[in-house]
Structures are given as structure tokens and as C-alpha cells.
Length: 243
Image (cartoon, rainbow, N blue to C red; front, side, top):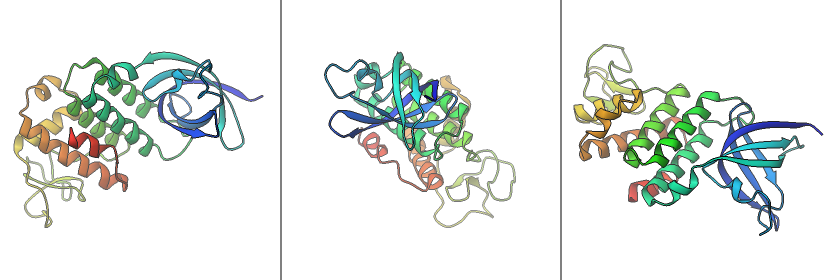
């Protein structure tokens, strides 16, 4: 049998037949993998609880024709327990998992930076050190940056002219100068743009000290920017907005 071992974060599960599940995992070395976990829905399953979303697991898999097969699973870190205990954390975490799947469209293509980013984001979210929405927005901005969609925040996204331009155009890729500003551009507060910069570089003292109105404006811009560049809506963001 062709076996391999990897660690990963469980992104999603789907029912298969009467007792099995299809598990989607973002792994350290292999990339995004879809595999069948046989018998995990039975009450006597040896590793059913280890293959739930948010769980950091060590896996052994058998290469299959269309889907691989999980043969062993060991929990490394159960992030799901502290995240599921708080509704705001849970909705933010769900949006992070969905985004991780969307920014890795090709199966079994190594994406180490995306994996490490997701692990760090879930660890921070589970710790409760920062507001859940701040953690989510920081993760979304960095995931986009790793995928090649870093928003321009200190120079015009179109002509490159430096300066703290006040207009933000999602299709253009960030802030734009008055001469390049297209119709329909947003006009966020300067502190909102500073907060976006802080979240991108991991400046948590600045982010934690920001005002709620700037956090809300940042979340709106980040969500719009994310969904424009992924060309797909992130359904779980709707739950975050309700929180």
C-alpha cells in the first residue's frame, strides 16, 4: 500500500454512506487533501472525534484512486473545544476554515505558508487574547497576501504615487490617489487604514487599542476585498456579521 504521513488542520467534513465521512484537511507538506475516514460516524469509532473541524491532527493516509483513506489519526491540538465554547470565536473560526479552503484551490499542492498561517490564527483565536473579529480580519488579510493579493495601503494601487490616499477601491487593489479614483470607491477613515496596516504586520497593541467604529469599517473593507479577489462569496462571513 502507498502510505504517507502528514499533520494538518481539519477544514470540513461531509457524510458518506451510513458510517463514513469525507474529511478535508489542510496539511503541512501535502497541501489540501480530501480523504475518506471509514466508520467514524459509528459510536465505537477509534478516531471519529479526532477528525472534527478546527482539530490539529497527525494523520496516516493511504493513497486512493480519487480520495485518499485515513488509516490513523492522532490529535495534536484540539482547537475546536475553546473555539466552539464561544459563539463569536466559533463564527470567526468557521470563516477562517472556509477561507483556507478557498485560497488553496488545487488539491495536493504544497502551501506551507497558508498552513502555518491557519495554525497561528486558530491558536490566537482559541486563546481569547484578542477580539475574535480582529483575529479573523488579520487572518484574512494575511491569507490574501500569501496568495498574492496584498492590498496597497501606503501608495496608489494604480499609479504607485506614495502617500496616505483616502479612497479605497476594491477592484483596483487598495488605496487610490484622487487622479486614479474610480467611481464607487470607499472613503474610509485614516484610522481604519492604519488598523488594516496593523493587522497585516501583526501590531496587536495598535489593533487592540482601536475604536469599534474603525474595526467595523475595516471588517467591511476586508470582507469586500476578500470576496472580490477570490471571486466567490464566503458564506460563513454572514454569520460573523450577525454577531
